[in-house]
Length: 95
Image (tube, rainbow, N blue to C red):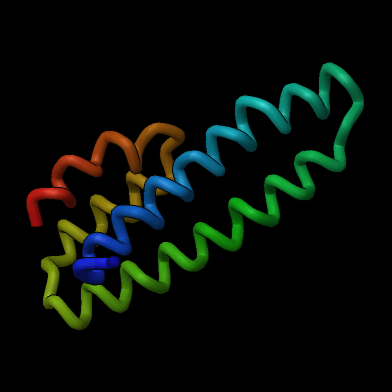
């Protein structure tokens, strides 16, 4: 069971991070090395949907739990970096 919205945000951030790594590490190389562009489309849509969901949940958590903009910004920037969600997770776990 989900304990809090912050916990749900952590789970979503890690899932989004995995989708980003799959897109960059599997789909993109297969597009250019094996001529399989469809994988980028599939992984890209999935990653995009997860990223949008993460942004919406981050906004909700920021407003409802009155997070400082620096914390929210840090989570957002981490979502833009390939390993960012994994690096920021320990800070979110403490909340």
